Length: 287
Image (cartoon, rainbow, N blue to C red; front, side, top):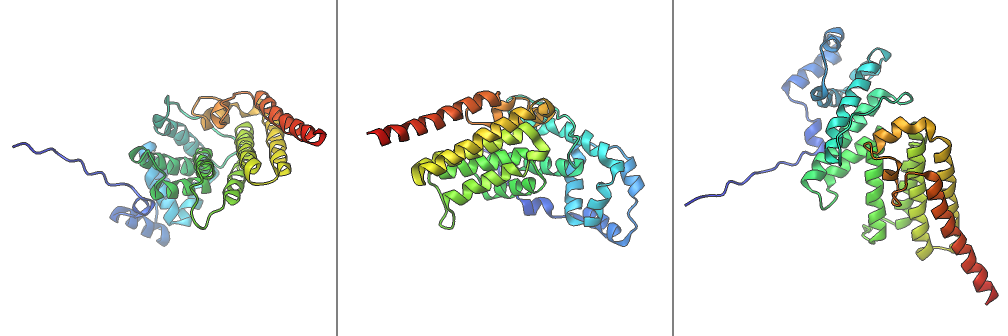
């Protein structure tokens, strides 16, 4: 009689990840005692396999995090971030390396991207729902300005509102405002891509407002989305590298539900919606 072999999958949680093993505890102790050999640690070659340890130690020790943020190590984190792109993009249509970001704290960028990577491992295991474990990793990633985490989390918020799957203590308006604020937090860092995320958030707010608030609120949200498209166009040339990284090489269309790579074309779609709204009001007044 044969027996089927069952594979037991243990889901990684944020608490599990942050738990230090014996060697990590010893390293933490050395850091606190001031006996940690910084030069020896950073002189050895680092790879993507080391990012988890570095992220954990910086979480456990503010002294270690401060050490890592020295300008001396900026290029190291940028290089590891570029390599990490291959691991993160493995969950998408094609694998890519990331370009360097010039205007972002490279160590925070690396940590945020790594937390997002862990969230995607959880998502791959539980693809049909947002698990609590994935959510916690996403929120850590957002804390370090991960554009990928913000986009994933905002899509979750939009879906909850659209399908009216709200918890007792949640309101659709608050969730949509949270999505808007999430996108706003990335504007200086991600340029055109972040402005298109903001345009998407305002568009989603407009769709909800059309059914649940006033026509005035609907129009104002569309106008805000249009203004965001204008800003996306303004910074388009300077944002090519960040667009590549944020979209996993798929282009600006990855940022919005219209799938449009051109902010100008997205603006046209939104302006048509606004025009139709104004025409309906004019027709109603005439009848």
